Image 1 (cartoon, helix red, strand yellow):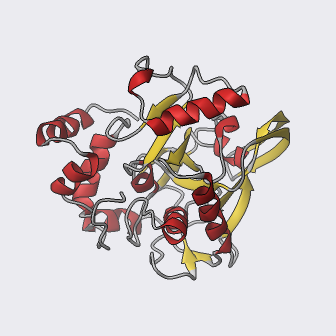
Image 2 (cartoon, rainbow, N blue to C red):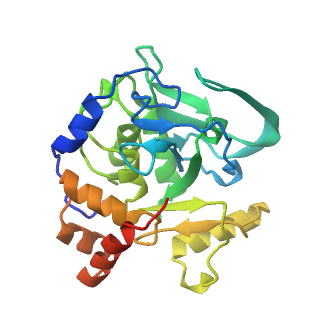
Length: 297
């Protein structure tokens, strides 16, 4: 959230206990706690990489994730391009390979590697191997700002630490990398300036739009914000199909009521912060909280 007072906070006791009871293990999903980050079902998702621009945001989710609606995040380090791809996904439970001609690009991420260096580039097709994945972008950001954020991320180096200090530069984790890159390069704070920043803090930020591929574009296109219209026009000029894109922004993101509840419990913002950040009334806030009990990601 860029307009909310994003003070550093101490994670709630409940989360601390939930994390500490899980034994740390190297995870090929990019998170340090295998059980806490959920379990990949083995069914490749259908994320479409053709829409990824440099600086766009990748999100992955595995069922059973204990710390929010997303398990991992990264950034597109270049624009999508058409070409041959070949990727081999391997973990203790699944051994899968994909290859062919299509859209591809690379990402910049912080992930557990078992080595001293945790800031790495990976083939984007890694994000097929989550139960669900999505792309996002920073609203109204210019291509230059996006490029600057990627260059900033590529300048980072260090080991992985799940509670890495937001301000230190020697340890990293996925959400910190993305947030710090946009913050350092453009003074755009995504999520919260906290050592316990999560992927969902970035995904639900009011300055981020998430788009999925399994539903139709809302029919009321005339009411879409300018940054969405510009994206649709850009994709049209590229000859890309936009009929199955959904743009989720502001309070119109699935699961946002649940995120508000978790954020209030964590103490990263107050109810008034939410009202100001998302420009909603208390009645709307109460309805989102009520609806969250029945929301399924």
